[in-house]
Length: 76
Length: 460
Image (cartoon, rainbow over all chains, first blue to last red; front, side, top):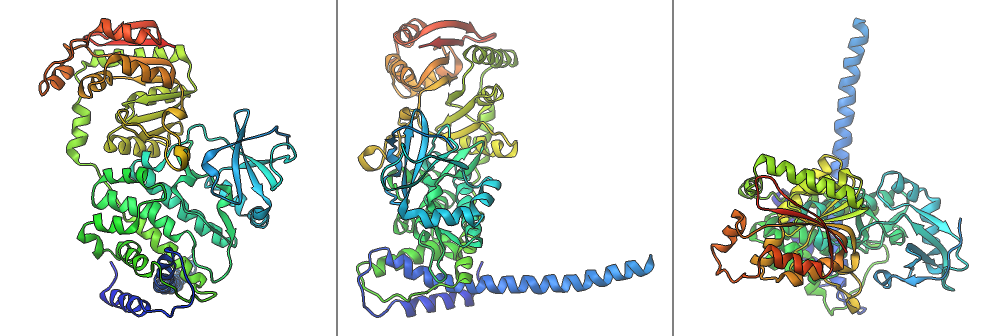
């Protein structure tokens, strides 16, 4: 489940986008197109954060497992 | 490389300007047009084709000589590995459609790694082959231009996300709406049929409800669009979000239904064994390559046919049976059973443009052998179908027929008659044989031990 802040942010972005400037005629699929751009910006950001967080966890894990194996080597 | 003679176009692929399917002497070929040249070359040169084929995600193909097979627009002619039986999304169970959706997203993710993207996300681009879903449209890949959004996003939502969410959240039978809407379920319709709680799931709130609102808002409006509006990270985030949405969707048939399946038989253990042995012996005599097991339940007799090497299409009208059958196929890694959801009293018709884009069930036959076990009384009594009509239908879909006659004295038939007036005076073994002998020759009949039921082996 997303947090309430994520949802509020998403709804804010959507409401801002619902009054775009008019230049060219678009087919009925344009609603999907524009919506995709907005949604992808949000989920892309979350995706990047998750990847970043995953890398931090991996890094920390490596440090600990590295020191653990060092200890093991010393004992041997 | 080999040379092929002139061609016969296949109707299902006429929309794509990149190429089309055609058949010649029973083999299916695909013409790749000059307009698609750059994309096809990239598919092969980038290593994407090899990676997808090695991972069993895309159907492999061979290139053949173009001179005598294609039109003047031809760049290349390819011969894909043949799919022995074509099935459609409205004939799949919940998990079959879910697996097809996840396959499409897995392919899209791999394509991005090789600088390509799917331009279609149609559920009809997936078929079940050797027990697993596989992507069959080699021309669906286009070179990815940095900054471009996913052109197939709306189609993916309509073909996969909308039907799966309706099946999972509202009623599994709503999967049948795919038969009505050939380009997937309209998102505003899906949104109106989904329960309120679906709006509390971020993925459904966004990809279906708000997506539908946005479609409505921008319909017939003019807007300016940026040239490179979507970063690669956003693209990956979108695919990841769709994948999470699909993975979290589940459908579990109610426990009582399962119990019913197990108990819904009146055979003694001896009669049951005798039935299995007799069906196996009849199958040996027909030596089929393709079997249709009609009214297959969860596929017990389909597995007898499959064990003999026949590709077995295991058909039932109950979504729970087809789901259980498919789950077993995946768990046991069974490669030659294809469970399908078809109501025989209203089988899949020809749909789409000119009623020819998707074939009817009958057009996809005939099978070498049809199994019709414990089915006749449901057709004749529950659905008021005269024996003549039933025999006509079977004569159009098979060469050999293994059929079980269930007499009126049988407890299952008596159960059907408790809620109906017995207007079935013609329901006798004699009229049954007479009706079927109009099309078939009865080669053998065996009365099952401890039972009034009779198994027939018939040949057209």
